[in-house]
Image (cartoon, rainbow, N blue to C red):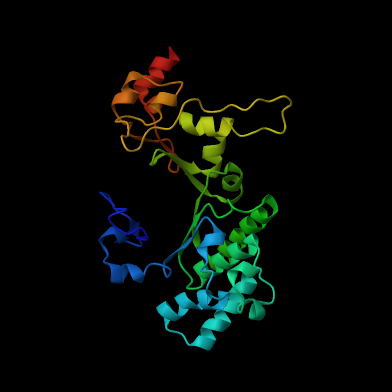
Length: 276
């Protein structure tokens, strides 16, 4: 989305394609027409995502009035409708209040409403339930599902919570050390994981259906990304690591039309070795 200013953050190479456009090549004025309009973002902490000095109504209507040039009354009407959609009661009164007058769950609903106000086609949600208790988490996830059905918006959900993934995702991309190491449908990733890291993640989830079950952590520590490894970044922690893993990053193996993995274990030569 281009929200991290340079030189703190930069895109060294590659591209970010959205609706046929490479976002990395757009200047600031063109990116402003994408940010909050075509692509919106829900940040991790609802406590700090809202401006404490502005009323909720001002924060809700700002994007709409900036990008769609609607009147103040039209923007207010749309904002109140959206507050109802995200489950905020008495929207007319709530519009006059400040963030500190809302609970954490209600603030997150307001952040979602702000992200949806310009009817984006893509919504990026960065750990949207991390700062919330379990009951509120469930309500927010149900809200995401309801919004997706009602508006058709595509949602990219960034999370480390496999329970959240299992509930809301259709397709899953598993990342390690900044790389997508496995991607597939929810059924493929959960029931037929192929990368050792994906298998380790799923094995480390506590099992309440088994008595005296011990947690199975992934041994070792993540690599230093200031000096990333040349080969597969999971090599040092992988129980199946081979010499080639440390030297060369594996290519992508397509297991099906929807399932792909970056792992040397999928190479035909490795399969013959393990078959022996």
